[in-house]
Amino acid sequence: MTFANMITTFAGAFIFPFLIRLLWGKMCDSWGAVGGWMAAGFIVGTAWTLNHGVGLMVQSGSAWIDMAWAAAAGLFVASAASGDDIGKGFINVIFALIGGTLGGLILSFLG
Image (tube, rainbow, N blue to C red; front, side, top):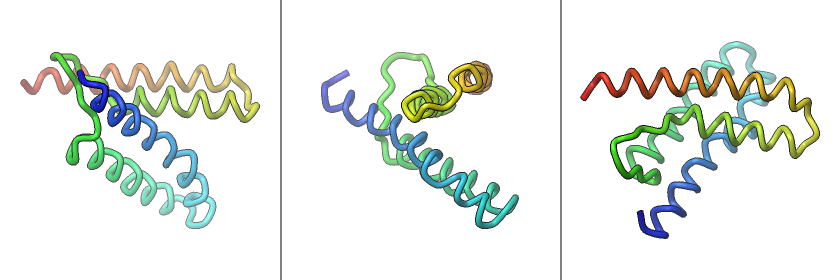
């Protein structure tokens, strides 16, 4: 992996949790449950398109890294930096890792 690929991969991994932290809660607060569904489609769809469609994420080898892992790591660090309860955040990281692992396993069955 080249240095440029490392930079674009890091940027792609940063964008997803950044958008979640920045927009998801505000959309839910403004529009209720519909805002949550819109946030899911907008944020996840936009991040997926940038990372996999446009190609910000560069994965070498046969292993897949699911976007849930990037979201878990990014949101945990943001919560810790803002002084939130780290114990509560760690439980969310564990569930995101489980979800990301299952997503990667399911993708591995496709090819």
